[in-house]
Length: 76
Image (cartoon, rainbow, N blue to C red; front, side):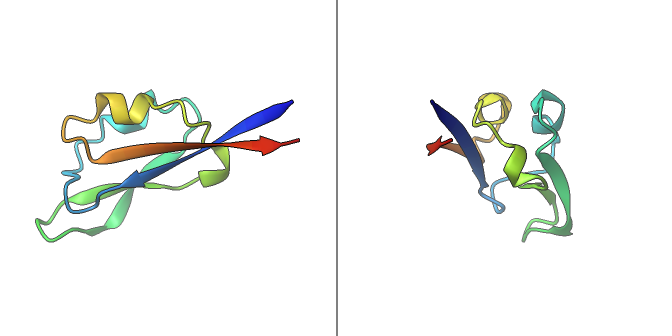
């Protein structure tokens, strides 16, 4: 049976660091960067990429549509 592996891509220049994505991530994948983008905002990034299931919760709640979610089937 194939397992689903997820990944997110954050558009760092669009992310305004609102942190809405962090509490909806049940797998604790997302954290805020210590670096800032051109607008001076800390942006979200994948701290634990191996834990991402591709559930899309983060992308759904993102008010700026800064997060894209990808899923890949991995053979076990």
